[in-house]
Image (cartoon, rainbow, N blue to C red; front, side, top):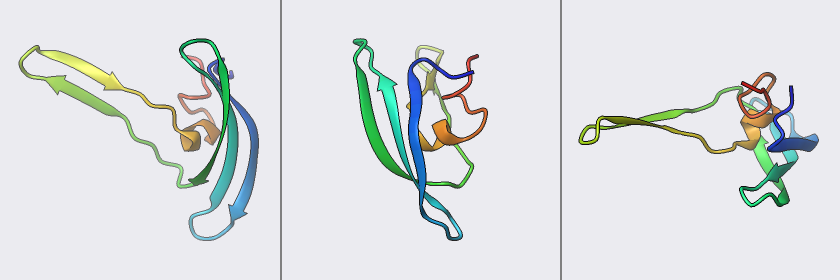
Length: 83
């Protein structure tokens, strides 16, 4: 299922080598409701990163999430899959 916050507009291959380089255009809904279209060049390495930060003083966890064009173009990624 497609996430309403991010929509893949176009994807093409810029370089087809050991690490393919893709050109990805996506539309992203901003926090204020506006839709912004951006284009990024992305190395297709099929990997991603998540950061789970722990504050010792407050004894709290903080899950960091930042939209990534490479994760959005991957099948069943958090950016394109409803949870």
